[in-house]
Length: 210
Image (cartoon, rainbow, N blue to C red):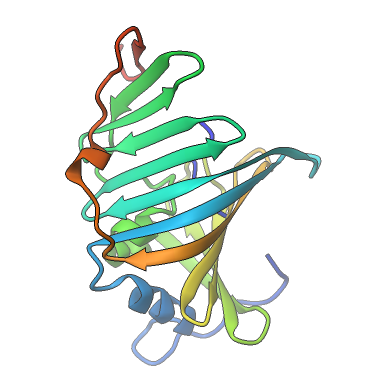
């Protein structure tokens, strides 16, 4: 599954939280998200193996809608569609003519996208560290409070109040780096974008069956 671990680095001690208990960059992230019922963006993905060698490069589109819906559509170098409809998670590979489906957790601690679809739960699920980046930017490191197989930690890059990158590092040392562009707050979208209809002839595999 190329994304659902799902975006996205420096040497610095965590900053002190601002008055009120929230780090400045975390406040920027909340300002970026709060009040928006949906977010849409373009992304590019660079995947690296445990030796730091580039293993895959891809690009696509991302759509998030509260409370817990997500659509990730890879366009290059080959198509893949991932839809979280609030109840189930669908991963469709047109080339294989196969879709894998499993129950969607209410809040998947293995995905830092929780920070975008349920921002009020960020500090509940993650331990947060902050460090400065280049002028006008800051990094947030999200470390799961409960161990998760798919992610050791994630790092979010905020530049002038906008989320520009996310880095995911798993327990094996593999890294996925995502860069975002063309963010839209409350974009027009159809409910059908979060509905997966199985195409004729496509095999359905239930990943959560005993």
